[in-house]
Image (tube, rainbow, N blue to C red; front, side, top):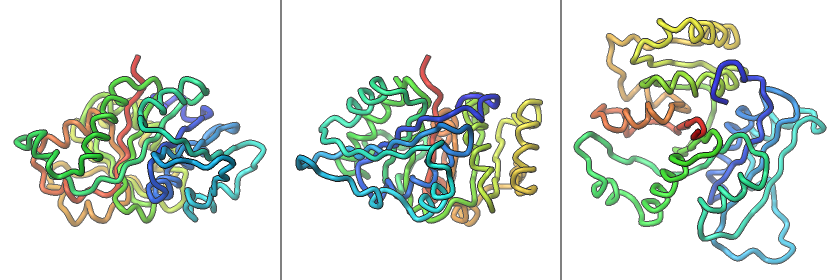
Length: 279
């Protein structure tokens, strides 16, 4: 998923989460990440639970799949695409994820969280952020950071903020590595009907990179010209941000964004933070 060239490659996606609400919210996003490219792709939903699981427990897949997910996947040839769902009892989510990735041939990881309205700025310390979170949330953020630092496959961190649709995408480009990790997933989302993208290219990458220009033009064709670039002479405001469904950003761009004092950061919609595998 790291380059423009392998957009059509088969994807074997591991989707991890701790609660069914987050699973449903991220399920449609997962479908477009995995199933808009090559055949023989797969999605594995993995519910990580601290509760005991009774022997012979049968997983109810409906608990983890949104109606939009079911509608999309229902149109696919079941012989060419597969969906599996598991639940595992564990007290160490990150260790379980790493173990599962190692044991099976996954090419992409998507981990879901529900953390809202964290105030960030250059002057906000770790202790001040910690005060805004439950102890379990703070611990999980630290463990997820560990996962991103040592990720053996491309990793997407999905932060749910009441995602209701998947039509308007906000794509900040704030770092060079963002230009390498974002094109493939964006090209997949562009194949969805009635989508539009707003690129905030703060570093002028699209203008100066011929390969990115070609990618941008292809997205315009797929979306019937509903791909736009934010005018950097204008300020992004809260009203615009609140109209978006999903913010897609690379981990370098995210690290830069949260250190700014921009007034709309606390109003971001659901977020998909993407980091290429650690080599």
